[in-house]
Length: 111
Image (spheres, rainbow, N blue to C red):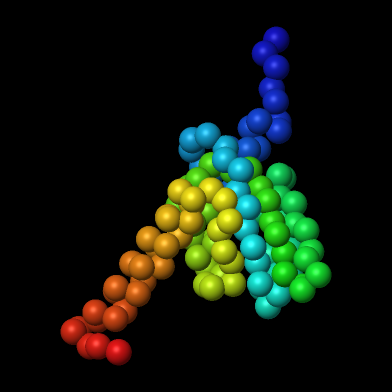
């Protein structure tokens, strides 16, 4: 009879979103203004949030680096900084840059 490892299977998902690829250790810094929103919503079984003395959080989780993870982080704007891995930080920056370009260059308007 084949053995089913629930923990290994769960690492392929990010909340309700499925990911592909190898699960990767992710560390995030969350500013105090966004900390409660992230701490109260457990998005993944591996998610661990540690409160910092200043009211911010350091959150760690192990998930595939998927567009859904990028979107989740970008959703918090400047409230979340990707500490690790650098590849995820670059993906979040790319997402943010695409938003800036789309809105600054809208119909040739300049801010």
